[in-house]
Image 1 (cartoon, helix red, strand yellow):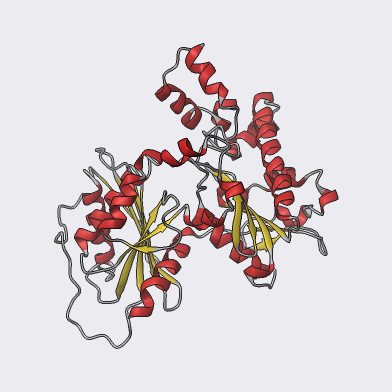
Image 2: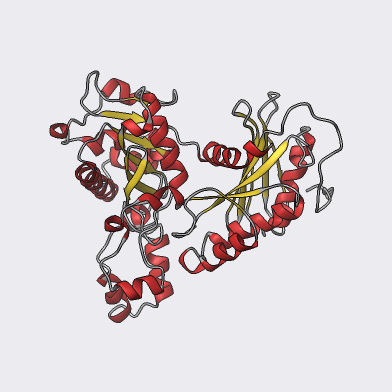
Length: 421
């Protein structure tokens, strides 16, 4: 890879500007990757996007796509030692398109932070107090919060003069009532160790629930929506009048639906059984439930397209995995129907939710008595943005709504700091 690097701390140029800055850089820092998008919030346009993955390996990949000039995606491989090098590689790519981090049009950097606990209920400008609290939450998000912190600190070093804003995956779910958020265990023990249901994928659920309301021609406050975020990670939420009242993930992203590699709901005594009878350690059980369960544990594949292909060839193991996946999904739809009392729409989103007509059809099959059904022709259409796939005049709308977590983070960041510029 090129050895040219921007200086660690970049400051905006002294060029005069006639309009307030409105660009927001969105960063999603994972344990071995950094995803980014640069957006102009004056018109909600995307200027560039990219990914640095396999950080720390000799075969690291930097992929960058300029989105305003019709430029082609650029890729380069070579060692990217750490997150500091990854963000500097990102800065190089942006600068090559005239979108450098020194631009006076850059207003803020918005960071996806997975776990905000009970404390963070909305987007927050990051300071040392915020960093300390995110760090204190590492025990309940050991795979995610450390990487998020690394991204924040590296970005702050690159542009120490800019507001750095944390947008939390858990924030949208903090409106859950205690009856939904509490586990039925000893209260003092739960409070001492922060054991409660937090929920995740919050930026996606927030964006999709509002987009579904727009699709119906109504305000979010007028509709009740069940959102089904179905990717490799999967979660459901019950959203009443724009506020989350229940969600399927809990203390960690392990609870709830059957996922690509995670088990979802199960009897907690299974863990004790595996430790006492199976001789497994806590770390081994953790790895089993998070990395070797779900669809991959049931049939060896976590790609829904491959599972459907195998089913078409008569593979019984793949069919059973699909049936278990759908059974759990249907249970949550029914449960959240009961929680909400009235449902205006069920919205499918994320990789599987947006692209698998078979999953959508199977998920609502047999629920016609509740007013749920899909139209075969509409449901078979691929792409095309937010759309209804339920029959004309259906009592409950079934929708496909592409999620846009980066736009949600950018909107929340701009709403927080844009008013001051």
